[in-house]
Image (cartoon, rainbow, N blue to C red):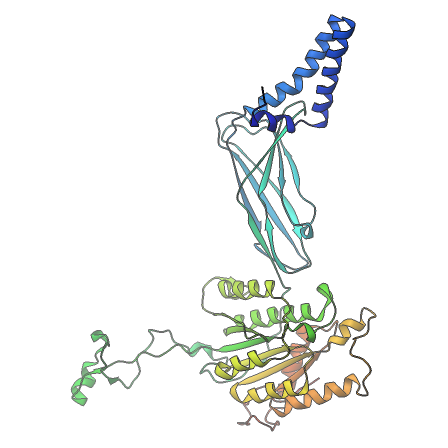
Length: 461
């Protein structure tokens, strides 16, 4: 008679010890039959019956086990560890046998964790934990959890898998930036965000005439009697501080590979600047060279380092998954800024041609303040002892840097330069020092409005 699927599963779960017992028993039975030794036959039958009995016992096991998984934290910065907590509950009325747990994790997070649990009493539970770590951003699946049932003699093991799985998001490293002066008007881009009102905020002092569809509860009767026509109270639109963080993701604009590349430095800088501005009360929009935009509002009561947890989570999740683009320039991003680029703009730029920088410089007229951090991507490559691959050029890197700085400064941008190993907080302080040293001193496409002008006037490289 052919074996049933359950028996086939049980026999396939025999361990090396169980197969050895079975082989030895069958051999002893065969020798006993050939030699006529009754005692050897008894030993052979015992050795054969033990693994088969263990397999039958596990096949008939009716444990009801539930599992749960908790991540701490659910978003782990690159290069830092996260802890995964597993809980196994025995929801049956019988005591379990020996349990072996194995959780599936990607190889980049470390070795696959395995645990051996003693018998779990009815309605009892066991908790175990393990650590994972990745130097690479991304979203990594965890699970499903596999449960191995074993007999007391280690002759047979059966594997049962749960269906639930989770994911760990490895986000860019975030550095705490110093408080620098980001001046501007409160009408959408300054730091006086305390004057912002909600959608159903205070009434205007001057009402307006009634329009078809207006809520009659908004009728302002005193003004209606004064003007002789139906008047309603206005509602102010929300006015909040706004900022755009432009991230250059072009593969052609960056050098190096892995966590030590200029691209990863730029992604980490974008995360640090975004959360810093959220903490300052800005509504931050993350924009890439491809024109993809994600916004994070500063509204919310819970905090992520002082910023709204929900807004910070949205921005960090986006930056965790951002990848190189195949674009040649910043035209899509410039179009987005041209249509709605008011407020503060912080641009993290790789290698760009002069005409691309000139186009970006012209957008300064539509912003309240603009800061460009130009990455010297060659320094990331030279750090590894590899040439930049651009070929010989009569122009030195310093000459090219000075020319590009001049292009942006003439448009009213503050320009900072970042090289491999530079500290972003120190660069951020340079912008503050440039503001103090150059208040009211720049001329160009932007217009100066007095000693309280924006701090993005002149660069300090």
